Image (cartoon, rainbow, N blue to C red; front, top):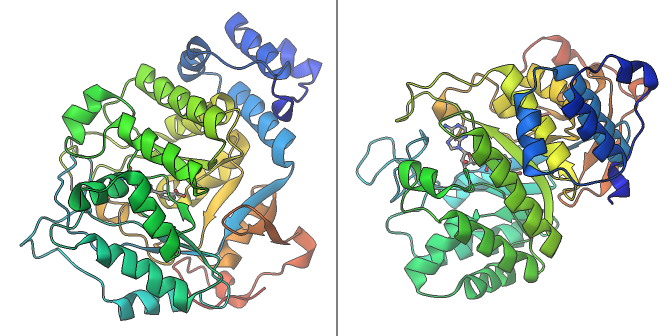
Length: 399
Ligand code: V47
């Protein structure tokens, strides 16, 4: 029984629901009973989006009420050079490719300094560089810790950590302890893709396996490093694989309680080996957000990742169970190299306005979801920069 998720549907709405399976699921949710694999598959199949929204938003509201979180953060992708060639990835470059880059520490500082006054989280993810020794990755954390002592360093996916164990021949525990001692706080949820051995072989062979991804997060949690989790959907995965992925995450979260947030990632098909696939529909995107809120009953937060969903769908996703809009980002590269049309970053004003316009209360948070400032409708007025209609990232923030 998970009382955190319990909410009450009004009788009028229930009368309009015809599908007995959905009614069963609704009863389960209301009584705090856990949803099964079959329930998950049923939710993915339904055409009743309104009911999905009603259920998932109900659970969201039982947990976080009107609040929707955002964070002042900065994404850093120190290099795109990678020994892997994942079929869904448009970001990586192989050694010798003119698109390959390596950021200098100065360049990294410049990007972070665009949000320096308010930044709470630095998110660092990059390629599995063919030549960089582990020390380069550790030093980056050390340097950032020194320069930004109060900022949460959320760095390196489980796939990268697994790569570090291979290049150092050390255990994941040893690697993570060294990173933690250098200043690493939390880990992002990337690199999970889909927990399916079939898809691992087909799409991302050579990368950490599903079992390994879960193991690295288990070890991280045991060391007090909290983390996020993702699912990359909208390519060649099946409904069964999606539900299995969520069940595996739920099981690990039961064991460790270390996950902060789940981030559904919408596959973008440009400039990669899966470019014959059409982008997912808004309907699919919203279904996955709702499904994750309903299945992951032990995850505190579900992210509506505006970079991938687009600002408008990201707003609607707040009515499908998401309670977090991610953040300012500053410069996103992974999804933009795959054709994302969103801005590469947003200002706080943009984020606040998106949340308010969706009918929720914006709450600025830190990396652990501690609440910093809330922005009720009346306390916030549009600034001239917002009215200019330019949604591209602008470094100036006004409260
Ligand atoms: O691991 C790669 C995915 C991830 C594509 O933890 C793609 O808070 C869409 O994990 N289309 C990196 N997605 C991004 C990520 C993330 C983002 C925001 C917040 C958090 C968090 C994590 O992007 C990769 C991979 O799964 N990805 N290629 C693509 N073509």
